[in-house]
Image (cartoon, rainbow, N blue to C red; front, side):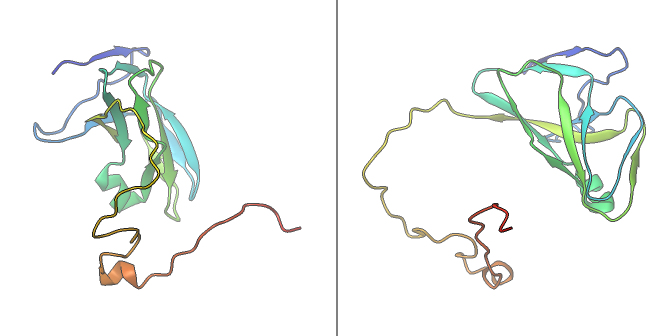
Length: 158
């Protein structure tokens, strides 16, 4: 399958897979930068992509960066209609400064199918065996024993 991309910076790198069977296409940064602990950064890639109808791009973390450095990705949906430069929102969840060098692989772009649907409002949703059982309802001990906290307001009590 062919996808079009455009370099808007001549130093940008094309999205590429490290291995033929990889799901994600690595995205690289254009310059050196660092992210302090618990800081977010919007990192430019210097490329634009054109996705097909009923597709979207999911910008996902690289497992090595997540495990070894505590780097995760936020806000990772690229809609088919978006034609601007790809930016990657990174967050440093570690307690150390993480440094990147120009052309480091910072995230991966995964092309996924999505569906154009018509929503139909109904009076009631048909029940299933699981029903309304949510977090921990499948009796996985490590999840079902955790306490869920519901946030109802962000208002300042002062």
